[in-house]
Length: 360
Image (cartoon, rainbow, N blue to C red):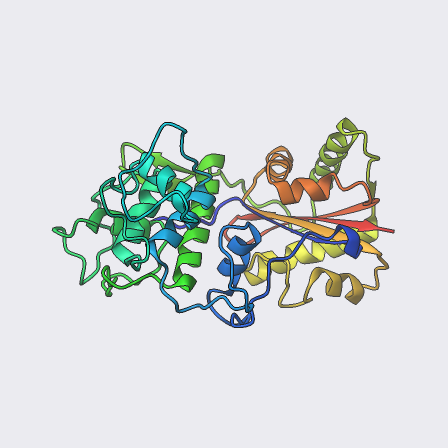
């Protein structure tokens, strides 16, 4: 069930005046940007799923307790208990800060009901695999496309561990040691949850689905057309701009002006991604979006950028952007006045799309 999630991707950037910039996640004094878990911690703390400590630290290597794990997973999956259910645990009372989260997951069968929950015990990596698989309703199979030297079939967590590994929720290398009985650190918990959220989002959008015939999760395949001439297709540019302006007009927002200078920059960004095999707002050639605008001598007081990869028509790429909150916010941002578009196809036939917005 090995899955590589790469087709039809979207990402967005926005820079306006400070008053309307999106809020940033809390900055923890002990989580440098160079740390491998910085981005997952930043992402889930921004969602309010996990918090730091009063002294401003995150404590990367501290084990996650079972009670903390219940709270994190319940918040991430928006799981709440019904009024009628009361678990039988004698070591977790309603006064406990995680009681309702434990109650919610126990009611769903994610935790076994009984006399003892052991809220202060460390969550083990094998337990983590089972909790995530059950909480996100992940189909568990025995394809064993990934195996670990210390996880045998007789291990009760075997199928859960191999399943989340095949989905990339855990990144332990094939044949290595998964260490199912080791405690889960706060750094690893953040990464596991952030990857599970990404998987769940792609599954809900249809980008990933479970193929019953193959008995594994697969990604949706988009047909890639024959590469067009290297120069930008003006009809595609016109279609996407018209589609964006139609969306704005439906919300009583003024249409955007096609800015040819901005399109020159957007086209350079699309060509750069296709030629240099990357997909990001920060370009190895031009730097950030703001740096790139300055490089081309473009005057701006605010900008936004939507990029996409793998979409084959103007309609599907704009539809994809409109279904994503961040991209939709750029398209419907009333302060934007101008739009530029770039479109390029790499040597493998994969399309790259760029929309750049500006305030002038």
